[in-house]
Structures are given as C-alpha cells and as structure tokens.
Length: 52
Image (cartoon, rainbow, N blue to C red; front, side):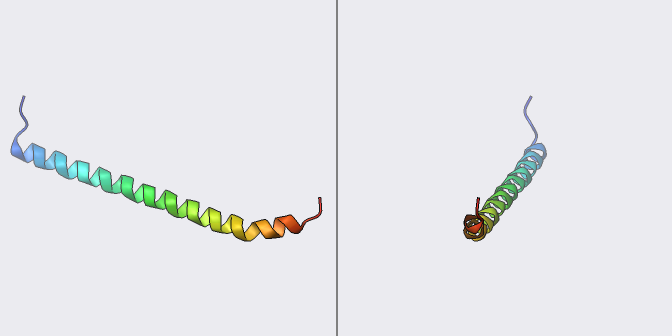
C-alpha cells in the first residue's frame, strides 16, 4: 500500500518534530552535565579542606 503525498508530508513533518524534541533533550542533558561539572569544580576545593 503506497502512502499518498499528503500522508508522506504529514509523516515527514511528524518525524521532523520528533527530531527537534530529541535535539532539545540532548541539549538539555548537555547543559545539565556542564552545570554539574561547574558545580563540582567549585565544590571540590571546599571538600578537600574538610578534615577527615
């Protein structure tokens, strides 16, 4: 069964929307990772000063 041109356009648009969501999620994850790394870099010197 061949999809009509309109169905193909709809599927392509839906796929493009999904790709944008994945890209946005990846960016958010990268931002969270960078924030965590910055926080750790700031906190590490403080933690090293605490006597064990």
